[in-house]
Image (cartoon, rainbow, N blue to C red; front, side, top):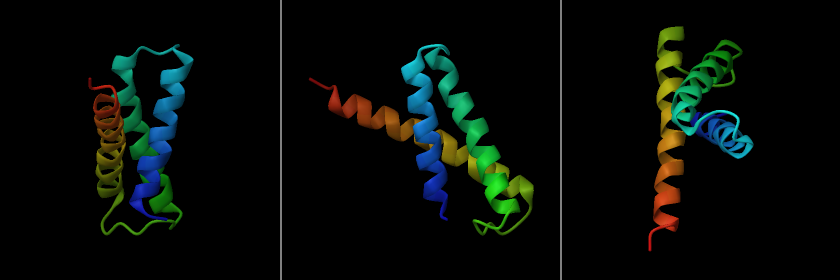
Length: 83
């Protein structure tokens, strides 16, 4: 598994949260960062991805991956809805 899979999973989670309209949109980046950190640490612990370093490195990599999923979604949304 690559880091891209974390971005994809967090993107799916973010789209699900956006669709259910139960949680305000302003919390989606925070939830994405937390989910990314959790997934990356779990994947690193079980050996599904190779991250040199400790769990702190895995957490930071996951936070960046989670936030990049949010950024990619915003880029796509603004590009497609631009008149």
